[in-house]
Length: 279
Image (cartoon, rainbow, N blue to C red; front, top):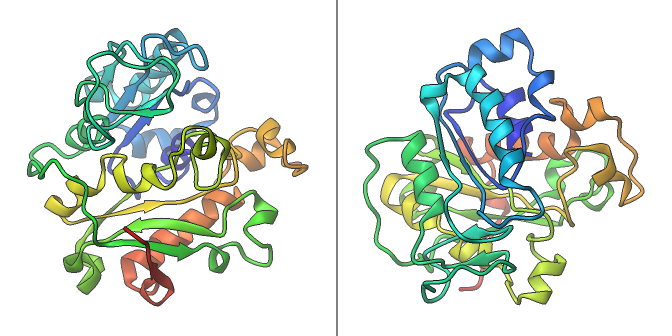
């Protein structure tokens, strides 16, 4: 979904970071006008060396296509970590010298994937404290952003996660917003959460919040029931039948939901819908 967001709303975004995803399915649909807006925007792509779900060669092919659009000098990649299909965060537990080939969230030798993404998009960021903030974590009801349908009817969870420091809460328009789209089955209540006992660890210890605190950034963690509906087969698994055009277009209801939350967080209109997340 991050790739669709990047392609469809290029004038709003400063850059893109993504993990273990190919991009060749989205690049042919990018229009000349979108390409013009995307040119010069930084892109960071990561994939584990032993990822068998989305193989490094597939990620590399997509990166090559994106390089033709944004400029090859704006691309940064890392395919070197001996891990599987995973998100790496130095805030998630004790560092392990040997990466896991199966765990979807892990601390592999203190590798800071979130920081590497943010530093590529925004050079010169302040280095944060290497601890996860316990305050500033909230739930935001997603039902206000799904129109006449319920979140479940568009494959979404009832609530999104939000990290917002006191400074950003007092003046949200002065803070940037970073959107983190969780991986398949890694949202709250998803099967990886249960199997690996992740809970809300992606939100609390995925690696973005400490950077956000140090650099006046709001982090939005939208949540879906399983996978984002970026292609029709993902939607069909929930008996929701969307065309490919609807999935990859700006009118994708999940993307519209996220856009609504971004707008209300930026203006402060979402503040009354926030509830404190337990530490």
